[in-house]
Amino acid sequence: MVRSGLQQDVINLYREGMRIALSKPPQIRPAFLLHLRYNFRNPPLKQRDYVAIEHQLRKMSKTLEMLSDASVQRISVSDEMEAWWAKEVSRARDRNVEEKEEKDQVKKTNTQGRDRDQFGGKLPGHGGT
Image: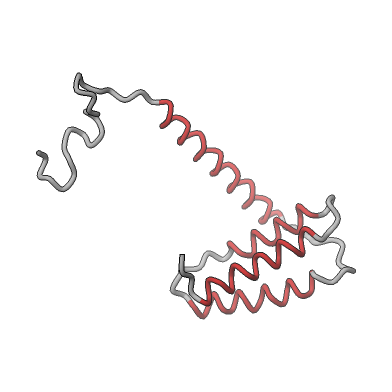
């Protein structure tokens, strides 16, 4: 997959943040990881909003530079961040349950073994033939 320079910058900055978070003591790592995830997802930006993305990159770069210092041993996590993370986790669990239910459904097949319900009895793009 070919990525633009801006996409590569975002990925590299996120990886740097992960390295910094994983370099911290295990008991405080979750707070650093939550802070990193939250700040990369909020505010939600559109792909074509280059100015806002570049601004967020500069802002996160400065934040990560500050957090990379060995003397930084704690980070504050707001209630908003924790609520956001709880919502993300529940959304992912709901998605997993839906996927599991889809896999568990039994498909009806006719005698020739063709799936009758696959496209509602019609083939897409073939005028229903």
